[in-house]
Length: 417
Image (cartoon, rainbow, N blue to C red):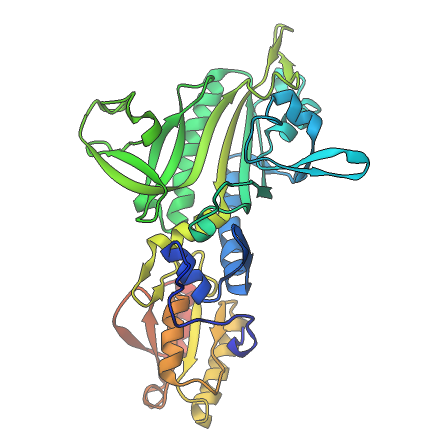
């Protein structure tokens, strides 16, 4: 990608109205644009990161046995009346169509996936099964805040699992805990993310949140110093000691939720008469679990966990580009020729590269903007490096750079060394 053609603008000054570090950096670096409170446009840089996060999540859900579908955002009022949530879910967006017919804009999809599953599940032989989607959600949050960490419109992965026995749900639930940590490892936030006990409501003793520690977190968690299990603030009073190891030594931390998993039981199968026949021919309700990750929130959390005083430091697996190619002086024909050749060679080898081909920016301006944007590798082409048939390669998360022969450059990035 030629940087001169990229649809973005950077801002040098910190944003006074930014409520979080990630909000400030993502706006200033040209990744997102705020349309109104709680609603954002993902610009090309941000969209590339979002798509990388989406692919990591999709890959892990498929490996966990999930089959991808896409359900409607526009949902019938009747389904929400069946579960009792039409009148008591305060974040529900309600809209009227022709003939005064009322609909919900889906904040979640239990009211849709349950009747959908009823059309496909009849026998114990149809179970277990897991389906997921990556879909836009709408929630009428009383106060959207912290940039993309809490919004009114957002992209979310929600997976639903269907089981014949509680034991089978429990087994799959434990499997999904491991899968979620695999996702967070690829996102570069695993070391700061804690499995956190939360209330399970009337149908499960506990549900689990995945909370990432950050100073702008809106949640308070208590981390067991011995086993690292966390408990959220709402249930801490019931658990003076850690339910896992029995220790009463906790550390209080601020955190933001980056995922959640829930044993739904029969809460949403019963209203829709979602049942199956067991091997004895007896009719029983299907047991359900749900597993969610907000993609935009995950993106914001990644920035909260990966930055320095100069800007964003993207983990390699989700960065908008792998390489930022920076010639220091494009007026110099040798530098321009070498840079264009390197650009073409990297593209030919399918290495994603942002080539700063702008001639109206000084080297200092280019370096400062490169730090702000946070691409993992910076390749600097200068008269000094070309004398040695080399370029200077600097990793964004390291202070020092190294000279690499131009002929070895493609191999370097292909091997990820």
